[in-house]
Image (cartoon, rainbow, N blue to C red; front, side, top):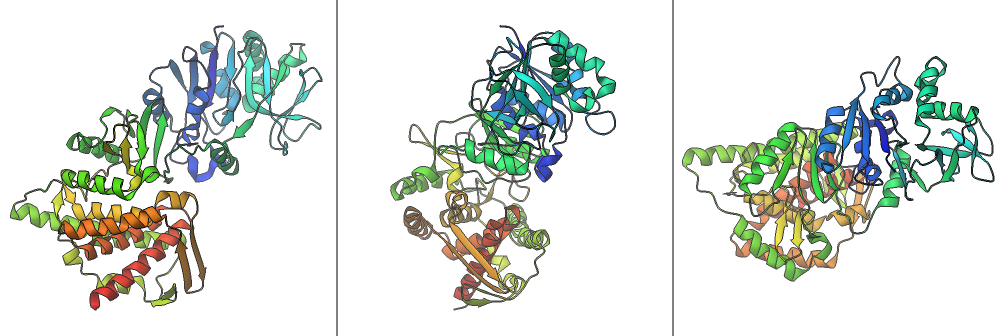
Length: 526
């Protein structure tokens, strides 16, 4: 049967709060994949998809062209998607010329488990949920026909309409929507046309689905939990970045176009160690999915030691002249001292905290500013220039199916430098991932409690990582690196990233970093 699909995606997504600020709400992630891709993949590849775009429309267009280049997707720009005169009905009516055939209408925030039927008859989808007040609803007859369509909190003994519908009598639908412009079709949307069709005797079937709404923060959390797979990578969510796995591709998104540009440029310098970028837009790039398993899932001491032998060849030393070396030390100082102080202030501002003397795990520790004042920044800035990754932890190390390693999600630059960075930063990032793995965070296997100026924290560590920590320390010493310097940078990394993560993980990172920094400085004074 020939039909099309309409996915309206022009709105602001205000119910998602800050989540929908930087991206179109259709791009919110569920199981490391934007919701709209979950929706699209419910339909055969030969079916044309009509997507309306408005808020962050160019971003959504770029995503669709990268993620679903093998499909026919027509994007319709909506000139008025918020404010006076706007509404779902207005958006739908802008698509009339593209939908002169039976079609399926599906919101971009509706996920269902069952197959979506053809629009070979008129049908409306409902679900069995407890709270029906916030949704439009339908009254269903014993023979599973729609008897009446109600507005929100209007009907009793009804089923919530989930916004998913098949429209076979498309000519009648468009007539009803246009004739109802002055009566509410602009504001109400597709359910106005369906209700009007029903009032003239046109039959509409009721179909039951297992439904997940991703349009609100609370419901999005439920959907993420339901769709999470054990095999999915443990990626910590960030407000301004995302990594998506779609259609046998990996797509990296950032709200900063310079970030994407630098990432693409650096990939050229890391050929043979990172995947080849096959497409790039202003805010995202993509590469083919590389089969394998992240190191975090298969880590053992022998495998880690094999990786250390491999990565040691990656760290190619750079010969710098005196001027280049001087500039490099300045860059290291900026990257370590200046960034740390800025990130710490960002942490204080974000959570409205003040720098204070505190008791952490029964040790009296002074203000962080006092600790940072004791750091030998000059010695710390005397880095060793090498090829670098920049975010080297086990989730960014892929053990390929053939046993080789592949590095993922590399840093875009080192304080502006793209050709080389400080090997000590890679060593410290690897060390930080051994101490606090993404798995521990995702399973909430850490504890933090604060009572005034008394803080207690703890973490449950995998014994394999403890073994790897000892092996890594041996490698550092045997390779001629400074273990104390690696540990010092690791404590600063914890302080740096605290401002970037969710509470209470952010608080745990901050106090772990402060605690370790204090102990290391005490050790250095002895």
